[in-house]
Amino acid sequence: MMMKRILGTTVSFAVLMSATTAFAQSEEVIAAAKAEGMLSTIALPHDWCGYGGIIADFKAKYPEITVNELNPDAGSADELEAVKANKDNKGPQAPDVLDVGLAFGPQAQSEGLLQPYKVSVWDSIPEGIKDPDGHWYGAYYGVMGFAVNTDLVENVPQDWADLLKPEYAGMVSLAGDPRASNQAILGVMAAGMAMGGAPGAEAAQKGLEFFKQLNDAGNFVPVIGKAGTLAQGTTPIVIAWDYNGLSWGKSLAGNPPVEVVIPSSAALAGVYVQAISAYAPQPNAAKLWMEHIFSDEGQLGYIRGGCQTARFTELVAAGKVPQDLLDAMPPADAYKNAYFPSLDEVNANSTAVTTNWDAVVGANVE
View: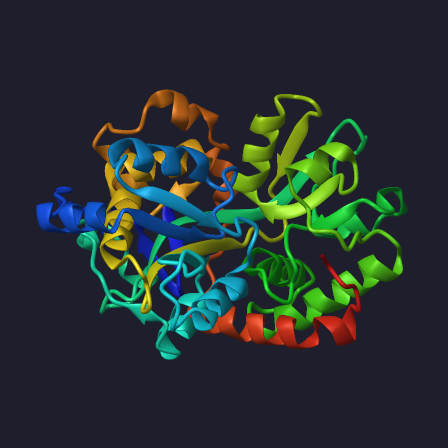
């Protein structure tokens, strides 16, 4: 039986996810959401964890609801700022729903930016990745890896220390600004763990020192890595969630070929949590969206995007995940050492990285 460490506790996914709750959406919520007629999302790139298909499925299911997609490339911190900036604004620039890194869920809750809502499959979501009162809850996770353009990189790096080699001059980037992007912030912690730092503030410091070395050596590219920059050769090596690398490779269809590597010394897992803005202009459409992404259909959408999900083991056990989707996912051995940091470790790392990146590394990533 596969065992993982989630938020500081060693647990069995089979045990965590054995409880099942039938998906049954309230007709009242559906009617109210259709009357609102719009859902405003934010920070959902179509090539991120299958969101293109998930959004398309929502539109097909509820054609009466227009999906207004705000700033697809925003980071988690940007999402919270968008909520704050639009507290008194009920227009289309105000997000209804959020998709943020684990540390940003409790932060948003403490700032009064979220409203609670428990989806109908609430009992199937592991306790360690949800607020007991329903302010935020995790839908999916990935593992930090390298997405490599093998047309330009002859010797594919297999571990963090490899990135310091002279042959990777002007090649290595992060998939976000480490002062605002959860993905990039945890990329720093993963590097620090590989350098021997304990998860949290110690790994953050060692990770910052690692990126200073990378920058001083001329290997670091201060450009946000994505499918386009990977293909163009601006960022031939991108430090990103494994599912992003897999999605980019799929979208590029071999032109160029992309290899996704899970570093051997430190495989850091990261959970993303979902929430409804306390100031959502369309709160019923927001609830409907939450039901959609946690339903069987929505969870399969994430799996198609190469992600592990909150209900993954449950759906596999029930025979609901097609074999071709399972075959397309990386081998289980690649994740055998995946480490799920505790919320305290994530928060300590986030504070250290966002506060000290400019002073230690000094690279303006944009």
